[in-house]
Amino acid sequence: MVSAFRMKIDLLAQIALIATTLLLLLVERWGIAAYPLIGLLVWQAFSALELFFAYHHRRRRYYLLLTATAAALLPLWTTLPYLWGYLPFALMAMWYLLETVYDFSVVYRRHRSFWDL
Image (tube, rainbow, N blue to C red; front, side):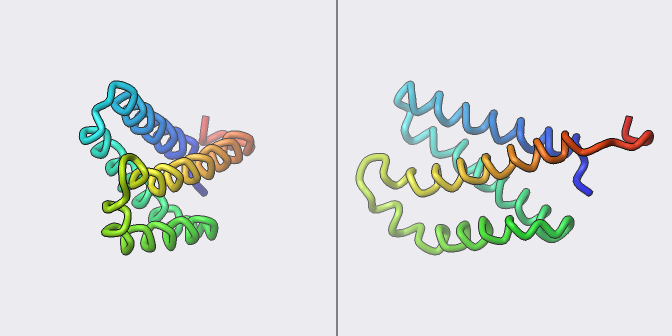
């Protein structure tokens, strides 16, 4: 069973990395904005791997397949003009963030035992 603390750390880290990426894009630091986005995708990939293998979350399998596909097509994404190369990865990050928010709400609605208090 996934702990509430683990989900809270996961969600807060993703929100912080997305906010950092968006802030850097707003101040037009295009090259530097790639670093928190890459960090976010690595964080999400390891989170999905842990949830898939340790907790048997079946929905994480789709994110892992999509991440592997996007990584294989990375040379294609880097040739796209302007910010279009960021778009597939930003959409993946937002999709995984929504999955994490849903799981976070499920974990926090679950009744806790005495030992969790």
